[in-house]
Length: 48
Image (cartoon, rainbow, N blue to C red; front, side, top):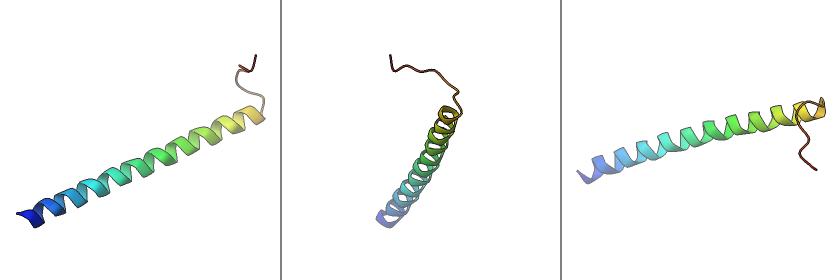
């Protein structure tokens, strides 16, 4: 029973790690898209 629980935990941990990695990729893409928009002069200047 303990081995089964360890296997389930390992799979859940791997699934969680995969979700985190995908989220990080999406965040990086959004940041780079925003950066490219700023270079093009798009967006709003909130600097005062």
